[in-house]
Length: 479
Image (tube, helix red, strand yellow):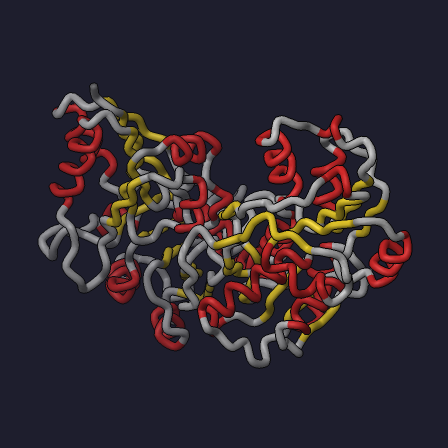
């Protein structure tokens, strides 16, 4: 049985510029064959068992040959697998996608192409340079300046006669040649020119000048690949239209918990921040739930959302369900824990949003009766400081991926919206053995602050309001 090869354009860098179909193909992939410049944030869409094969060509280093890449695609597809060939930009724009498509057809392998947004367009857009503009540029022309060898040259005579915007990809090494060839054939040295480095990425940089000084500007600012070079009158709009580099948190390096659906990463990205993430402890290791005789229990306080389904599981294992517990009162700590319990049709007797709520603890103790607390193992110690009730650990949490602190030294601010994120941050920091020293940590709520203070952190900045927007405001204030 033959599989399917998808030649997929990853887009120019911003992970949110991936197409919807591209996202679906990543989610379905059995094998991912990817290039050097693709944003690895896209890997979050992959299945956990997807095989990842790096075939990226690194400048100045030995690299896998194109023939070998094509062989991998064919062999994996013939094993009946869904293979995604992930390429930066668009597969058919200087990405050798056409060559790979031809080889797949000759081998009798089914394939498709999912286009991507090319940096030739998006890189300029994010730098405030429109490709066309009425009465200024009515056409644009895209060239590769990375040629096979010295014997292959662009047709500069033809290029010099073109009207409109000229865009050169992969051309930083040949920037002086581009300038020389154009000015020798009628382009004035005052012709506007610009360079966009790492277009659409948080580390994007751009500079504009003229053909007369763009080489010196590039050298002075140390512009390197990957960069897009643009020549044309539309460059004059860069200062006015450069929305991306003028975002309030543009390029600022902020550390948050990884989340595909959270509002915090979306708002930070919209403000231009460069996000680094630590994983949540999503791996639940179930512990043996040694419950007392429930006939003698008056109340159960759940202090972790995972404890509730594990409690229900233990009931079913004993041949019981909630109907056998009409005498038991239920209470919850935390919004998500309360929602989990209420989804089962239970009306809570008590609830509090914060684990550190001393008034709630005092009221529960005063109420009396035979109460037990069910929670995660890592919360037992802090709960024991507030409650004299028996505490039962239903589970422990673990990271499902290795913690790497390689880029943590570049972090400028840490943002933690709740106590769960704070606990995971503390655990990740301890596992990596990393000292955050003077990096400010923005937190929302007293319970989040309490987790960090208990772990020995001191440079804690609490938001003015208990809202995600207030976290963004505090980051802007600090940075």
